[in-house]
Image (cartoon, rainbow, N blue to C red; front, top):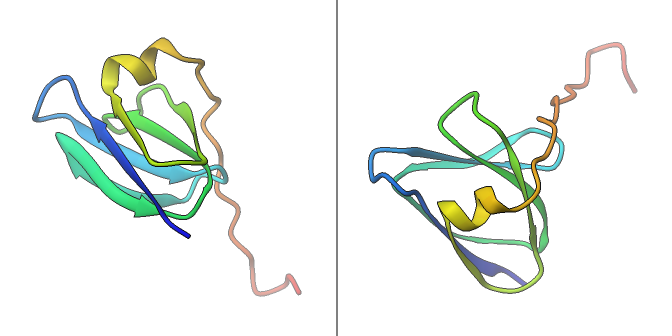
Length: 87
């Protein structure tokens, strides 16, 4: 099952970055992110290297940047990549 997620930036030229809760990039768009995703926990930031905010997708959702930024902040997840030495 997939849910639609729409996140609209306050300024049309703003990059909207969406990552999973482990820090891996899922999708990036300019101005508006409009996608379909599996339910789960994600993080969003408006411009690379800015504050991250959690998004828990359990139903179709539409957010304005101001709504996301009014919620809690989330520490930037650090992606973990397996090495050749790991099983």
